[in-house]
Length: 296
Length: 66
Image (cartoon, rainbow over the protein chains, first blue to last red):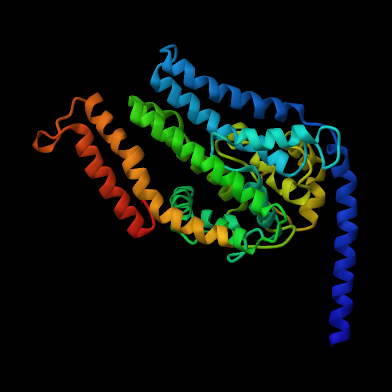
C-alpha cells in the first residue's frame, strides 16, 4: 500500500515538474527585459507626490485637489516597489541593480512602507500564500471587500498580533537588521515631519496630504492586491492559492491584479506582461486546475 | 528580536505621543478652520491637547485606534 502511494507521489511530482517546464518555456518569453515603464512610474510618481507639497503651500494647488492627487499618487506607489522586490527591474549583480534598489526604496515613501521590510514579508506571502499561520497577508481575509477592508484596518493596528509582525519574528533574513534600521528612520522621519507641520500651523495640510491618503491607499491596495486576487483565501498550493478573475472595476483600477495567478507562478514576469502571459498560458493552467474565475 | 521588543515598547508610547504631537494641533486647527466653539470657551489648542492626549491614552490601552 505504501509502495503504491509512494509511486503515485513520484508520478505526481514528475508530472508537476513536467508542467513547470512547459509553463516556464512560455514564461521565459515575457521575462528578462527592463520594465522601464515601471521605473518611470515609480520615480515619476514620487516626484509628483513631492511636488504636491510646495504647490499646496504656495497656493497653486487647492487643498482638496492636493488631497485627491496625494491619495491617487500614494495608491499608485506600491507596484513599482513590488517589481523591485522581485528584482524584475535588475537582478543582483547586474549593471542596473542600483536602479532596482532606488525604485524599491523611493517609490513607497508616501506609503511609509520600508522596501526591505516589504520584501522580507512579501517573500513569506509567496512561500505560504493563504496559510492562516504563516501568510503575513492573511489579515486581509474577508467574505466581502468591505469586511476585508475592515479586517485589514484592524490587522495593521499597532497592537494587533498581525501577520507582518509575526513574519518578521520568524524571518532569518540576513538583511533583517538593516531593514529594521531603515524602517525606524522612515517612521521617525514621517512622524517628525507631521509634528513639525502640525505645530507650525499646517496640521490640516499634513493630514490631508500624507496621513489620510496613506490610510486610504493602504486599504485600497490591500483590497485589490491582496484580498481580490486570493479570495476566499482558503486554498493553498501552486495552482490554487491565487486566481485569475475579472474585476468589476476593470484592469486599470484593480491595478493589473486580474492576472495575479501568473505573478505567483512566475514572480519575475513584469506586471505589464502578466496579461499576455496569462492569455498564452490559459488553456494549460485550466488543465492543471488553476482557479479561474475569469469568463473566456 | 531585541528590536521587536523595544519596538513594542515604542508602539505603546507611540499613540500617546501621536495624540499630543499631531492630533492635538490637528483638532485645534480643524475647530478654528470650521469656526466651531470649544467647550467652556477654552483655547482650541488646550481642547486639542486634552482630546488628543485622551484618545492617545485610550488607544495605547486598547492596543488599537479603531
